Image (tube, rainbow, N blue to C red):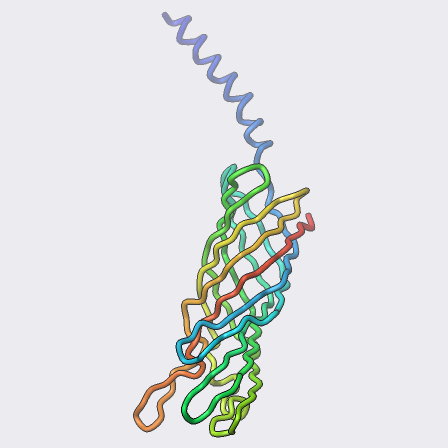
Length: 215
């Protein structure tokens, strides 16, 4: 009986000494790299007749940190341009305002590997408004967006959620993401005891990206 126990313990120890090095070899190091792409952004608002997408970009860096064989955490930091072309139409004035917003954005994404080359991405983002510019074309200048809205009228912090899918080929990752803002980009203000927000809108962005590791 004692010989069997010793033999079993020896086999367990031998198996452990063989398995542990193999597992250590499977640990994937953190990847660092650059990421960039093009944005098709819009503003979701109820105060306008229509809001059309505008073209923008994003460019920055990322770190991909594997946690298991199928799950990685990927924080990123990049500059991104958002906004929209908003058409408004009321009894007093109608026209188009083009909002161009530049953010420094920090997403923290979970990458779930569903096959050898495909991953799903989801997670939150937070961004800081660096610059906000608006151009205005109206039939009358009862309210001129360019003269009445500047950087102080925007909320500096934007936050929301990202959902996307990526395809990995030779360590490069390309794909598409959708980010949905959960905060208003305009600050709440008061005029004659009435509160209002201009622009009363949230960001929405479709992004096509390419990420390339450098290590």
